[in-house]
Length: 366
Ligand code: NAP
Ligand code: HSE
Image (tube, rainbow, N blue to C red; front, side, top):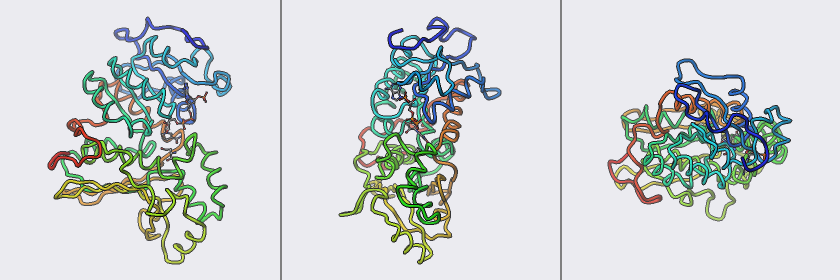
């Protein structure tokens, strides 16, 4: 294999009939470490089909990964070569746009199932990746991209398939919710609260996307795909009020105290609606005052909450941990188990997304 590190075993075992499904894990940071650790321990859900085995783990810094407990024999710094050696499932947990997008597209194009937590890539390249996955029939699963380990995407795709969703709103970024909570109730400064979110593994490698609302906007694009049947143009999501600063970067301790005095809390609210008549969509991520004693106002710290409005159910809500290695690994492991058991893509029974990102979804489409 090119690149440094040595993968023991090699490609020959990949896909052997009746043998374990070989999983290539790209990235072993906050989330990847948990996933790799579970696989090394032999974690496998009961009744989930073929057993799983690690084909290898790609990182940039081999020594750091080894020091974190990943056996040297599993490590490489050449993710493309790891895939070329052969894998039955690819788990992408590197983050960022490239090389993640290219590696995911290549694996799906070769018919290899992919699990990812990478909302940045899915929000920008979801239409292309869905088209590839549908062409090769390779399952593409990204439950971990929204709400960490708390299930929401399959709920939209499968369990709500008998409804027409008209609105999705909620708290979808754990870092900013942690910051707002700690500033309002813990007396922490913005800087100290952000540092706490980074230390806990909630923030992205570059937390700009968290605090400026970009990460929440990525998640909203993914939610809208499953709720409304189309891939929104990511740049169509509003992340600042006219003249205002993006995300929570303009929210001060004084703003939070004033809201508290009014019985309110400030939350970074992601919201997407579809007009029942024109089918046009609005999508925004904005700091919003909500009653302190409402479900959204009471959603604190790293917890996320998403509320969904549909014609037959009215409003329903889902709440749970939205970030962190262990929580997010739960969704990755579940996706991987679903693939081992023969499951399909995250969009489940939904029809192919309407083609044009940003254009209104066809009336009646879902
Ligand atoms: P992270 O801690 O920064 O880890 C990234 C890992 O990928 C590291 O092992 C890094 O290696 C490796 N990597 C990055 N670029 C690489 C490259 N070009 N080649 C080989 N290895 C590369 O990130 P994370 O927090 O685990 O997040 C991973 C993904 O999950 C991201 O897409 C993120 O948005 C998503 N996610 C994270 C959370 C969370 O709570 N953290 C929750 C939901 C979704 P080195 O360390 O050697 O550089
Ligand atoms: N940085 C993200 C957050 C990770 O804080 O919500 C989970 O997607």
